[in-house]
Image (tube, rainbow, N blue to C red; front, top):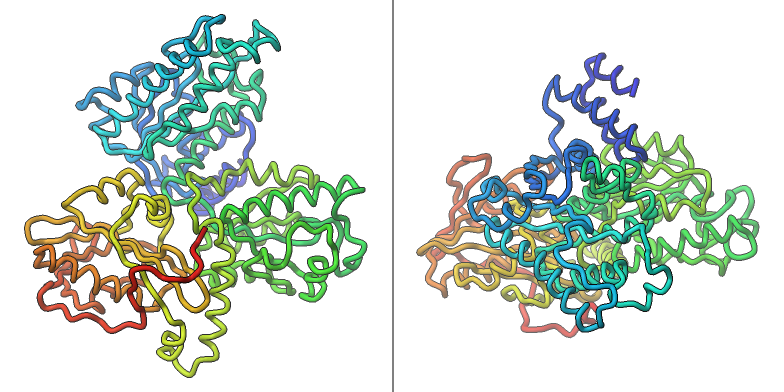
Length: 621
């Protein structure tokens, strides 16, 4: 805390804010979090906090008191890159606020509504000795109660809803016999939680309090004293992991989940220093406690890779030495092909990380860095403050827990592309090699043999479309981030013209890489969403999509296509896109540049992308 106060007193508020947010990412206990919140108030007295990459209007509704949660939650959100405006409803007023179309919550216009619950908010419980069918009926009643509230609020406010499920009770009057009794309270709560997860519509995101409480221990999670005295939903002991978990879920909703994990090697993936000890003497695998811990960490990393997280290496090593364990040690869980980038040299870690971000064409704020050496961690923190740096302990057995608890790779849905993301980037490397060998860029594009499917939104692709909308920053003209349910409404509406692009080439399937949506008013069509994966920049897809959109607009009777470009720190790459496509500048207002295209005068742009009804490349599965 002294560092924060000294930085503030020295007239370096930006550094103080940065340090505050770094500390907020790793603080573990409530007293320390309260001190950070106090420091935040002091900084706010001197001016506004720095701009965050994303913003959220957040409504809090609860059947418990939440005053003690608001400041820690705001700070946890800022630490995750989310600025927030928060509206908190009164205690136990959640039902009225969600059902009333004129409630203060609805008038607030939230992007996200957070519904905080406890078992005390269960509207009905089955008798202890109830039959299975009777218990099932009560489960239906409880689920319908909560999901109806969420449906109604969504209808009124058009917002995403984060609904907390229910932690188990610390009292077990039936003991072990409760496992066989359908009406046992904890068995009933588990059934309700499972049903909520299965039945929740796309716009309802379940915050898994049951699992979170079990990880920390129900006895620690719920304190009867604070419930009786203050109706507090979680103990002070567990308040920090609670708000951090909420913040990471909301961050994922706003496209702030990390994409790439950059790893050190020595004493991070294995025990020992490969350059000194040699590959044969490294500690990894069964027969040694440390070796088993390193292997388990690698298993966790492999599971992250399998669900779409990119893995990379930044190690101070000779490359030949660094690669040897992957080839010669069968105990290694990870293999060289599991990494999309591998930097083993003697440069600063920050320089290698910056190069990894450039090669993958992702922002530094999409990277997480893991290194056992505190000096290396500090060097990266200072040089690259946007990179999230994990604070590791000394015991490798704790590594997967520490990474998991960070919540930086929170996922709301898993798309088909996630499962093969590493292979997609490997194919990008082959494309780069082809480009370097081609005499000119046009020849390179022709040799790619690109085939594209361009079609209106479809239900089977909505998860991927929502994922792209949530996380695309560079090729994103309007910066809107509609939820899956809002995208579904666009898909169903006759007022919207929508399109997605799937792309394949001679190296394989790129997957679904671009999304477009425009709203019709009379003979005018207003672009609300236009974005594309950074992996396929400048390959003619944007021009081919524009050809498709203008043809579809003309066929539907639209005469003018209105484009909006809202500039951000990251999307400068598309600043001139409308001009390049033939749009005329109309001026700037409300912080955005406005453009207009006469549909009847548009002339299609020639590209090296062939539009097909379907392509025969390997399907993403």
